[in-house]
Structures are given as C-alpha cells and as structure tokens.
Length: 253
Image 1: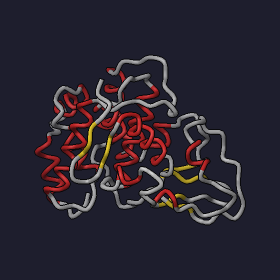
Image 2: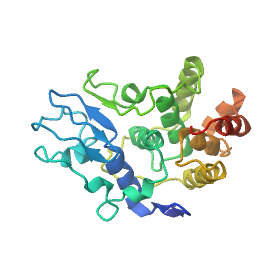
Image 3: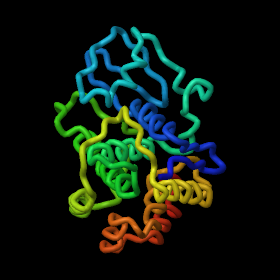
Image 4: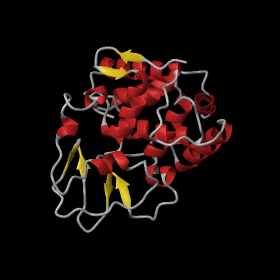
C-alpha cells in the first residue's frame, strides 16, 4: 500500500499519515459557521470573534479541528505559519481545489474506502463545480447552519446540472462501499491520485498560473484512464484535450 510521495517543485508533501491528517486539519477551515457572532475563516486566519459561540454539533469530529482554533475570541494566525502547521503542503492549491480535496476525503470515508482514489476526487470536483458541497457532504445538517467559503462568485459551472447529477449517481453507484471511516482516521492516497496531483502541478506550471485550480485538477484526472469515473466522462465526450483548451483560454481558472 502506497502511503508516501512528494510532489516536486512546490513543496507539496503527501507523506505517510501526515497527508490525510493535514488534508483534514487544513481543509476544515474552509467553511463559515453562521452564528450571532460569525466566525469567518478566510485564507488560514480567523476574523475577530466577539464572543465564543457553541459550534453546532455537526457530525463531530468533522469540525473538531476547526473548533480547536476558536480560542475565546482571539484571532489565530498560526495556520498561516509554515513553522507551526502543514499549510506549506498545499501552498500551490487554490482554495477551491483544497475544498475539492476535502470533499474527496469526506466521500472516501463515507463509503469506507481504504484509500482516497481518483473517483473520490472526481465526485468532490463535481460537487464543488455545482455549488453542492454543503448538500453533498452534510445532507443531514440544517440548511443555513454553515457554508463553505466561496471566493469565486462569478464561477460558471463546467458541467450542466443534468450531466453533473448523472455523473454523481453513476460514480457513487459504481464505487464499493463498506463501514464508514471517520475523518479522525488517516486514509492514504492511492498511487493514481498522487500521479494526478503531480500532473495537475505540471499543467499549472505549463500555463504559468499562480495556483493549481480546479480545471488543472480535472485535466489531470482525465489522464487516469483506469478510473471508472473518467471512463464515464469520456462517454460524455469530455476529454483532457478539451479541458486543456479551456484552461488555455482563461487567465486563471
């Protein structure tokens, strides 16, 4: 079982259990908690909290890491300090891409996977693209309790709603299921997913974009032809070449 790899050139280190633990701890800061005194994590730092509010009991320990940083209204800056966290591991991924990775971890654990694989990331990609992260990851949570930070209000979904819903239904129907795994448990990345992350970074470098954006990730995933989800994308005539054309036509994706 492959637990370790290093993505060259960007300090992105997917090593042993650190990878999935960092994925959980860092990604947990991507959503807002809607309370009378809103805690709004943005860019790895917390806005000033006027008074400590009780975080709704949303499937702990999913929010435990975020809650650990809500320290009596004090602003926390340590998350942005590479000396005190693993933030440097994800420095080349945009916020949207990190949310996709977090979604992949949640969905992999939900189905009891022993690895986070390409199809888990593809499910996360579609959910993020459609603005369905809250509904797709936490369907039992009361609407309005919290929401993921959305830094791209002008985002136009890549997939039509019909294709997106069909993809999600078919992929989740294909993937094997077992007893669910909580987010406090480490799940390694598959070798195919590590390869996809390497490819996404290469695409980012080729187009000289500042961060690894979702379209870079999708283009990389489309090269992983052993994936059942990627085969479904090909059935819809979605190819790496078409995604790369879209990447090239945009300043940042």
